[in-house]
Image 1 (spheres, rainbow, N blue to C red):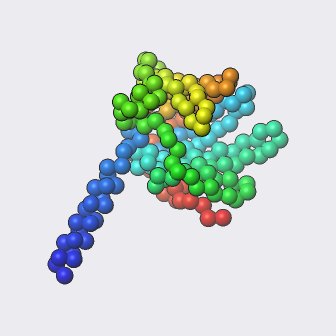
Image 2: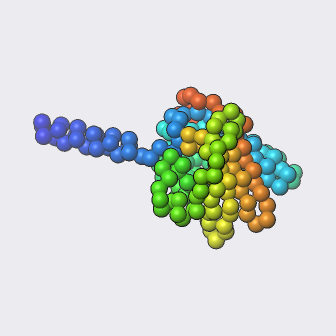
Image 3: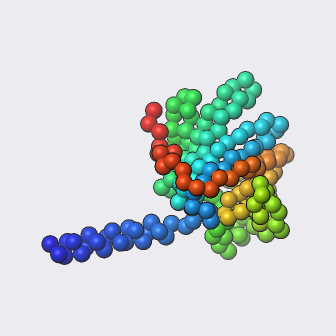
Length: 187
């Protein structure tokens, strides 16, 4: 019995150690970010909630575009991304999206994305490091200028296919968020 108890405690300690080793994406434990995006003259707002230093993220966007109402969400957790269509009540599970973790810029990531730190600037009252990079996904390439505070992209200017997409944080609230936001919806 003592041996089983010892083995159980060792397994719990190993699981706890693995959980703690998950790389932090942000330097802030939890909070809420409101972002304004300009896409070809169309403005949209999104609210992103995060916890566990960004390893849990949930974002919801509601907007009207070309006469259509759009209500979409994105949930990132457990190495997966869930695309949520609230209008049609559909959840699509995908592997986690590859993102640059600014809290852990390895030489490999810097070389692959041609990342360069090019200065500092303030966005939404937060002092940001400014990076430029070139990314390629699904056969498309883009140039990105990212303004980053505590690992959080506070502003990005993405140039691809002859257009610029500007996303800028307009408000950051640090503090606990509702854990139910990070649950996959069951429609």
